[in-house]
Length: 168
Image 1: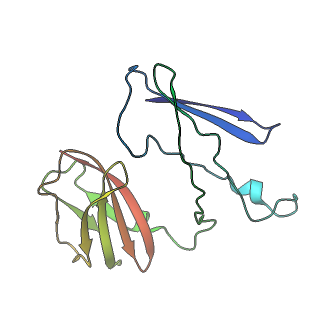
Image 2 (image 1 turned 45 degrees about the vertical axis):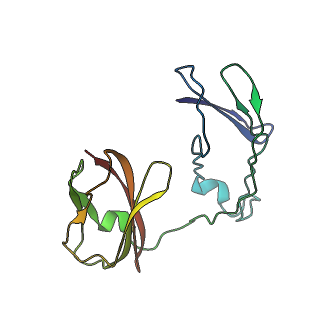
């Protein structure tokens, strides 16, 4: 897949397109991509007439087949909290994941952080495996996990961290 975007400051919008470079239609249900929006701190600065609330609206979503047939898409409104500041070091910098790539098992190393939960998510964001209160220094098993790219998400009282993991 490739993507393109066009920023139109005058209209106050960003137009984004995602297209397949192989010319094949994809079938089935589920997400076809992710949209990540980064807000630079200075656009929310005081004294410039900006409020502390940033609103985004995703609309006019169209899915078009390679034969240029348009499919109806439902884009329900979603509200997501946004992290606007950090106190202390993020959890993803206080823990380290190894080995990466991994086969069979991996570790999340830390001297000071006690984990409440670790999740292994596939690239669609679906949970594949879950560990509650994993013991420090104990390997986290990947037995039965298909090779591929996964997201490891860890939760502790100190916050939430995430790392990409390649399973061989």
